[in-house]
Image (cartoon, one colour):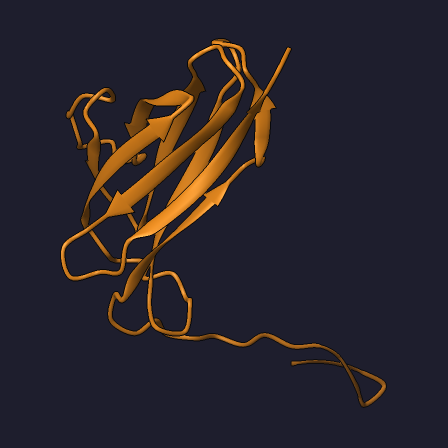
Length: 131
């Protein structure tokens, strides 16, 4: 807590995460152009029952993309993970990984589903708008 003239001006709260409970997907933008050169980046997080990211979770996540696009790549930022970016699975690093979606070139929706053993799955939809 920071005080100035006896008045609180700042505070910090630290929270510990509980055990992993579900996956959370966050897309950088809900609509992209229906152009093969446009991409949507989806952050995948392992979270506890309260929605706090579990920072030490190393969970294998499987991805399925259906609709007007494809799963272009996946990554985790783990410098010791030599697996291919093109495989539809990735183990989270510090409770996170990333999926990249690419439109097929036609307007529509891309639905990304992420699944992991013993965790609730998650889905996100990205709209592909006409050019």
